[in-house]
Length: 220
Image (cartoon, rainbow, N blue to C red; front, top):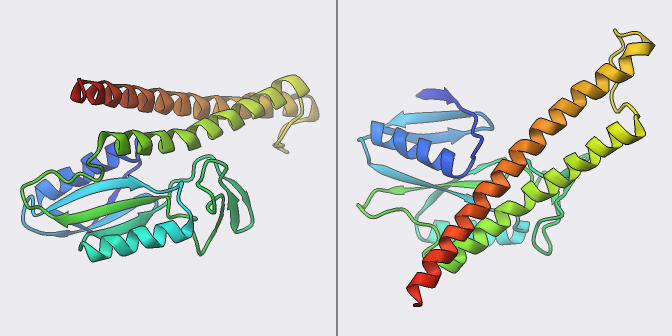
């Protein structure tokens, strides 16, 4: 058993590329966690991997999708992707999700936002979406959580800088400096998260634009 630690700024394409690189090296995925992956040795290039975002789906839709994967003999691993979600206990509100999926529970869609798909390599590319319009639709769904996360980060920045009200307190600092240091530190973290979200939105927008151009060329 081989265990590897990995964090992805691009959890879909980046993770998919990395897993296929491991498969070429002769490693088969056996278990996946939030940051750790366990592999077993296999023949080089014996398996192929694809990663699909399903965080917009309801729990019923997820089960139907997974049932379909079982029917076509594609193995899958569920993985978390916590973006743009607002939690109350074990319930999360996902404003970007499909109808019936906006409230997620620990027994439903929480920590099941991504599916890693695995199949034996038959020499053909492992493609999830064959139609261009389906690829565009999938990319648009992936933009939504980043958009809501960015909007929430902007709201927090405005709250901190205009209302000047601390959200967290660091008790080791005296009262005079505590609020300023807390707000500067938190503002920096929020800004970094916001920048990452903007970059991902821009990248996905460019991918959609590229697919639209290809679609137009097909029908010319």
